[in-house]
Image (cartoon, helix red, strand yellow):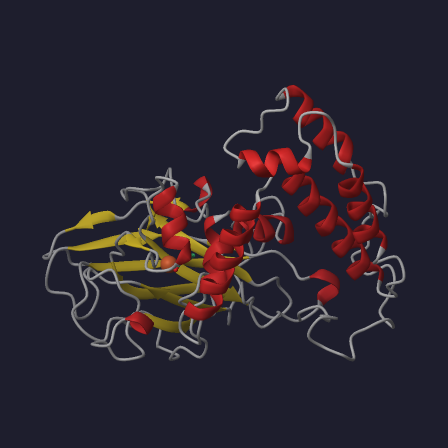
Length: 361
Ligand code: BEZ
Ligand code: FE
């Protein structure tokens, strides 16, 4: 369940547990904003790199921090002092402190701030129910992967998690053990199978695998007007021995959308927008933590420089090549095919709680 959000839910204000997620928070005035900014400005000898000279003069950079600037930061942080929701107060004070420190450290100019506002405005304009440019910012700045890594410190032995990505669509069709997920021709057949196990190696019967991937045209079904909605996605249940199997196709690398502000940021930064080939998997089982992850193809380019920083070495796996006349050929396959055997290990749920319904980031 998502935490209450005091910004969107008027009922979610004070009453919460004050200790909820409470890390020892910074308090107003404790953020190292101005000492850091002073040090930065003095080491640059007053010349702030790539800033408007008029702005540099206006801020007084070079001969110390303008007193008004320091006061503004203190006032902005202190403005959250009356907040009754401790976690919200902690997050906002820290956000404002770090934001001010960033502005001070780079000597952000008026024109740069205007550009940033324009980029955020463009982000809102291009976002709709099929395109989420805000998440793309989060992905390409590494924040999605960081939030995931903090939320899912993998217990020893369990399969590591990674980001959900924007192409997950709930309620994929429930398919039979070993069934294909391609509703039409989509690439080299790939038989993916293994077991779902707990962290001490016991099989988990009745676990649900929710899988989705792209095909050789690089597209997910949700992006592809020429594919049925159920193409290249499906849910599978493990059998009594914890086994799962499905017939996928070899996934291919693809480019994240580049026709919006995030694409302009990547181009301006000489960064590419490719992701390495992968199959998405969510594993759910009652009493266990839901695992949201990818299986990356070991032969794919971009494993070392994923545009969204989601690759973890433990998630890279190899397809073995199989001939068309191999007697183990899965039903419906007539060409050469690939095989991957992979066990997925999930961690027990906290306090024996049932599986959560899946994450949305
Ligand atoms: C994906 O894996 O589908 C994805 C993740 C982050 C950004 C774009 C795509
Ligand atoms: Fe993907």
